[in-house]
Image 1 (cartoon, rainbow, N blue to C red):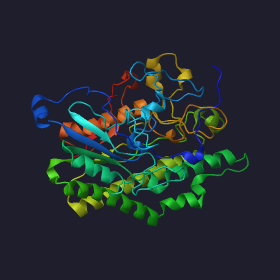
Image 2 (image 1 turned 90 degrees about the vertical axis):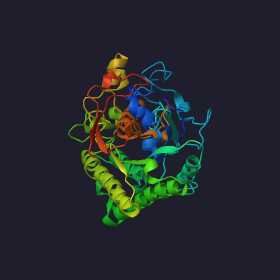
Image 3 (image 1 turned 45 degrees about the horizontal axis):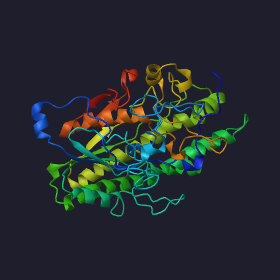
Length: 414
């Protein structure tokens, strides 16, 4: 099949996304036992944080280099593109522009739970009244998402769960990816510009900055606990789950594409050394800071925090990883569901062609990827009986259809 220029996103707009309140997208695949259902009588569940929990990228089913519409209506087809309306959490618009809160976001467990998505694409631990694009980005503070949480917590229905994903943007995730892609594109056969050797990039991971970001995350977690206590909640009346970040790109050893095809075909324009640095250093450092922040917050508040490890949930279906395929390389929906990447392509310039992709969707879980995250959260929350654990990729992605969550593995650790 003839290939077109790959779908790629403007470098300067690679933002961690999130931020959306939406109606529950589906009923749970299996209900609790009668006694547990009586004990877990329902309530409000709330998501806070950035794009990795808001639902960024949730309009797409997978990647294509032909700019193909992957299939129309979300309720009718497994090749999904419902357009930008996927992020309309306020009927015909977004509550906060560019927060990109999608209906496929993990918080929408359905059933007896009323889900509210307060996360926002590009959010950091602190509120930004106007970023470079002029967007308001509510952080995890009283001026932002904690203020919104307080309003929900003092409403008529009790909050039973708060789920948090935060920290990536505090590490300047978007500029780091931008530097890696820019270095790849500007290099020559005789000279490679690798972002892992750029002082401006690796300074984000100095001991001093890691400690600073870890402290910011800990303060955000403590703020959530204080907000709930100030709203009159006893510590044993609600639960807090803090999740880390999934691995989104493959390693050089498992890359489907060689360097010469990585831009035009794969949508993952990064050098081997940068792919390995990203998976072997950047992600572990980020997730280590999240884990350390949880320890700090627990020690400061004496509040039990449930930990959710998402590191490996997309392994085998990460961007550019073998044995994935693009939409135009498959002939049936079932085949496509089984082998599609679960992470959106990185694009280098939507100015070259008229693409249907929003700039900030790069490197975010797509529709089926988000349903996998929802499956993980459902098992961790366990209908009101939360348990820490780690989620791994499902054994059969092809078994998933629109509205149905893939059966990811969950290993409880406590």
